[in-house]
Length: 448
Image (cartoon, rainbow, N blue to C red; front, side, top):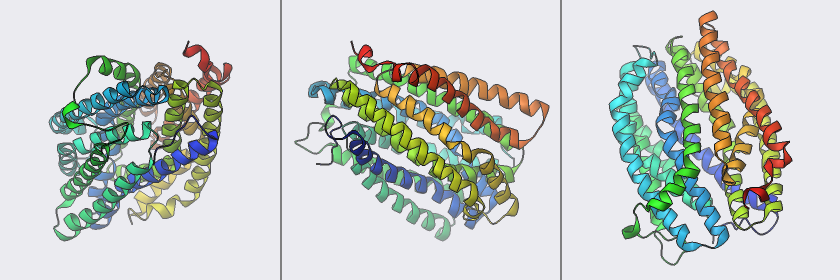
């Protein structure tokens, strides 16, 4: 009932119908991530805000590889659905879930063990460090909820169902707000309460997705006794997914390097940049919704050998995402002083968040373009090309640029400029190599 069949109907309608629930879902997920910072900033102060709001890059570094690998399963599920190969599709789904469980357990161990060492390596302000360690450790104790939600929602989105993950995320987001207020405002649990509230809410969304997937009489029904690793299918998932996982990880690593340099400017800089990051997450929403939609659209249509349709959908998705992202970037540029006040009342924190926004936000169209072209490539089973581009530009070049600039001039604006600079370079490469060159290299040749 809720599944969008991407191989029929007008391309733009199918992409929008699929993307809009993802957009709303991503909106709630960003609210989910921001509520902790808002409540912590207003109840506990700027030091606690710095501990929580600067968490995104480190969390992304740990989780991004496995979440990227899940995209490989999504490509396979979309492809098998387009081919009507339902047996292989179910094997891919059950293997993906087994892989998700294993990944969650690995992340818990790594996160709990390594968090203090990484935070110290990142030059975390000593005043912030104890609360940062507490927040991160509790986050990783419950991180399996994050991993499994991404696994389950990725399966549902791959079959064209972006509505149910949205509904489950809305429920968990509201739960997160209530638990934050209860644990922090009533029980005075501090940042530990914020982390536990987030973990419980994420586990809830994962559990609701799982209940939906085990319903009977669906072509994608999950059977608990069949959840296991099919080695041949895992190999295919990893072939498709590892490039995306590596791409995510190296971007995460580069951003951790940037964050470690931000930390050298003190807790106000950590808080201010953390506030900007939360707001930027909202600006990134159209990019998120269209990238996921384009990967599914491309995968299903190539599986059905609808090559022209895949090209038309790719054009529409990329252009629309770029225009939306830039419109939001302009709004962010002007509204940032007011948005920052939601998180903190400290003038220095507000000023830093505003200055970072006015260095970066007008270049969101470059970010959207790079991510959308990469999404089409992944849907076509060509994740290696985006991996190489992101590795060379968003990781290696960004890290070199940051370290050289900080050695020459310890100026936080130079750190901020690393983002639009690397977005611009990758966009130029994508345009000349992948778009200008026979519109994404000719889908037909890839599938012969």
